[in-house]
Image (tube, rainbow, N blue to C red):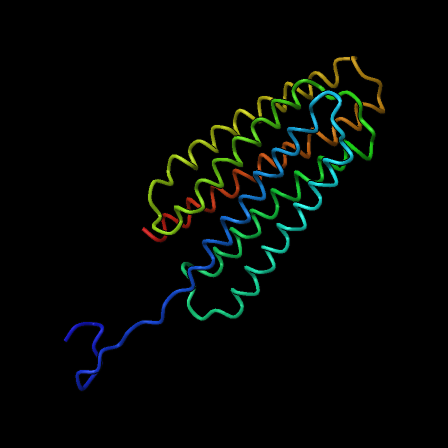
Length: 214
C-alpha cells in the first residue's frame, strides 16, 4: 500500500493547492515595473511631474488592491503553495517597494523640486532594473527553479545603489545647495534608497522560500 492509500484500498487524493497566489504575486510585481517607469519619466526634462506622480499614486492603489486580495485569499484558503508566513512576508515586501517609490514621487511634487541631482537618475535606474528582475522572477516561484541569479543580481544592484546613495549625499553637502534645498533633496534620495533596500528584502524572502521548498 502506498502512502496515498488508506485502509480498505481507498486511495487518498490530497487537496489541491491554490495556484492563484502565483498570478497575484506576478501582478503585484508588474505594478512595480509600472511604478519604476513612471519615476523614470519624472526625470525627463519638461515632463509633467505632477501628472506622473498622480499616475504613480493610482498604480500604488492598484498594488494595494492586489495585496488585499492576497490576504483575503490567504485567510480563506486551506492549503497554500508554500508557508503562510512566507506569503505574508513576500506580499508585504512587494507592497513596501511600491509605497517607497510612490513616497519619493510625492516628495518631488510636494517640494516642487525643479532640478534633481544627477545621482537620482542613477538611483531610479537601479530601481527600474530591480523591478524588471523581480517581475521576471515571480513566475518562477511555481517550480522554484533558476531563482538564484535573481537574488544575486538584486543584491549586486543594492550594493551599487548604496554607492550611488553615498555619492549623492556627498554632492548634497558639497555646498552646491542651500540648507533648505538639501533637506528636501535628502528626503527624495533617502526614499529612493529605501525602495532599493526594499527590493533586496523581497529578493531575500524569495531566497529563503526557495531554500525551504527545495
